[in-house]
Image 1 (cartoon, rainbow, N blue to C red):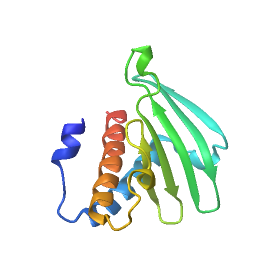
Image 2: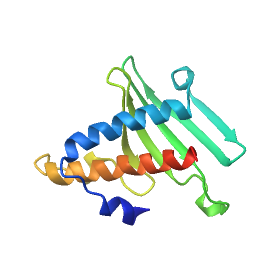
Image 3: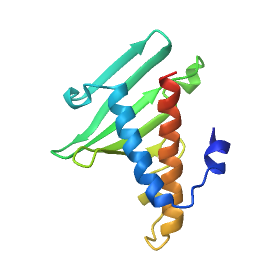
Image 4: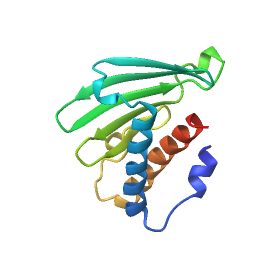
Length: 139
């Protein structure tokens, strides 16, 4: 999956990142329609997929930060992978991945805000990963 993420690199990454975050927001609410009613944690199970776990990390009037874990593998060593931390912007209808099971939060990786291209590319890969995970859940 990482090879596919690295190969797709749009020219206008800023616009595409916004569209990706909008799409991720829609997919997240399709996956968890009652997301706004979850106060601490929830577990979902479907016949075709393994367990989906959601933990609310932070909640305010306009944002929600959650951890989403879905185990695709039967291997117990991989339980809880992939794991993503997602900030949901309720007023803007965006869902931005802050980190995943492999990559740290962008603020930990890039201390220099002047590295805008590298930051954008890093955010693109994080959010594209969620897009692919969400797509596989709806098959």
